[in-house]
Image 1 (cartoon, rainbow, N blue to C red):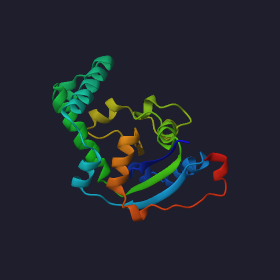
Image 2 (cartoon, rainbow, N blue to C red):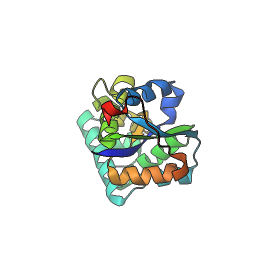
Image 3 (cartoon, one colour):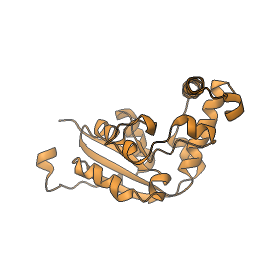
Length: 193
């Protein structure tokens, strides 16, 4: 069976909006087991480790922003200050870091069958206005990337979920020591695992 572990973060915006219980409840109802859980403040260096980026990432994000500006008739230079994809991507990265250090973060390691895929589906699309109703982002926020970028801030999308097995392993290793992860059996585990 495909029992996996994945990292889920409730970002400062999710905590500030009082959604901790609702978010955790949804993962537990899905049958995912919490094997690690903590709340902590992180600094800028830690946030940069959480959001490692490449020039390819910067350019992709910058190009997406340029495409959104063109689609909605927004003057990119007036609202973001540049039309260079690399520079736009660097700004977005900094805004993501700023959001993650703006308040406490709840980090959870979830375990279960196809936990990585399940957690991502439950979170919904990264950009909330594209997320389906019934997902965490689709139900609790509707901000667009462009609206956030124009305001010079990150997309407030409540949660982070690891995107694949490799990222989940790196995320868990960054956020948790091995001794902080717990093995126990849920009463309903035979129905889910």
